[in-house]
Length: 452
Image 1 (cartoon, rainbow, N blue to C red):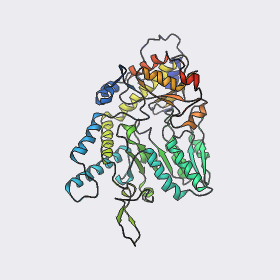
Image 2: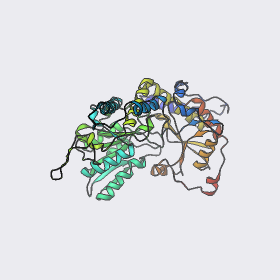
Image 3: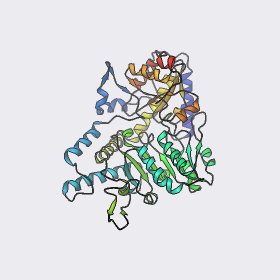
Image 4: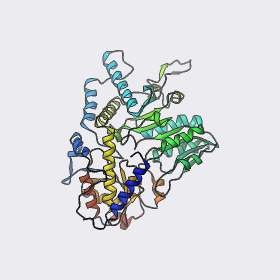
């Protein structure tokens, strides 16, 4: 949804539907945007969705934690190992040249997918957490010293919070947290107000992994740049759901994980603007990072991205990630965004109609695949266990973002996070299962305990 007016219309429509007392309990789930055929169309592409647990078909709604993999990605990984497996950039023989070409083609695919200008602005890393730690220990230590500040938002995942907190603690700097409001949003204006003269770096999430809240990152980056503050954007929850153009955002650094975007685990991307990326010192040193080594002469490191990819990289992971992006590109981002909107609006409507269930935040304002709920008087782990008994896989708890969850005064939430293969029929199953949830062991014996 592009216009503010459209956002308001959808929020109003959702609220109006929730308040209709005449709604039949057994009525099928619908959305303000109508049916979406994408889920049914692509389900056969994902082998794991054929599994059953306790006789129940798998309803997988934990895509914000990791998405399932289409057969095309699985085939790309197997094909690489079967036909092109060799180390890259090291062997002077044809198979090694082939592997190197495949690896660099994957880098080019990612470059196109995120709108980077140059392939060498794409660094392959194990994932978002590794990328943020790399930046904290290179960029952070270069820019931040005693008495300085690092600005983050109050909705950060631990992976985009703890590395900066550790940096500040180690150098005597201060971590400035821009709080979220009661709807779970951080305004660009509040972010700008926090950018005092001591702020040397900022780290912000594009989309909240708890609520699906979409931050105004373009405006936030623009504010930071007016103060000459570089920005690290955690895009882990954005890239699977919306087209990302790092040049349009004017991003300095943008990081995400491949396994959330239907690619393999163990591969991720650190995008860095070329002029900034080439300033980073090697995070790890070893094979592939140097031009030559002498026991007496200074070590000469190669340019980025190779200087930041020490050792044997996850070549098959890069190949699988490229296959995932090609798959999504063929589906079309307009179709994916429409599907997201349909499922989120339907879920807000459906679960909000169940007595005692409350939607946290405002996911209908700009749907991004996540709806987080609480059930009055019932621990989220009991709710998650009840849904699992019905074959529905969700995430329950604090989602590695307990400081954000704390702002809502709840023990945790139950997160429904959608992927391209989910359907309105699955939303209906969630709604029906929530109607029968009752307090369990967590509610009666551990009402305030949480660990996930």
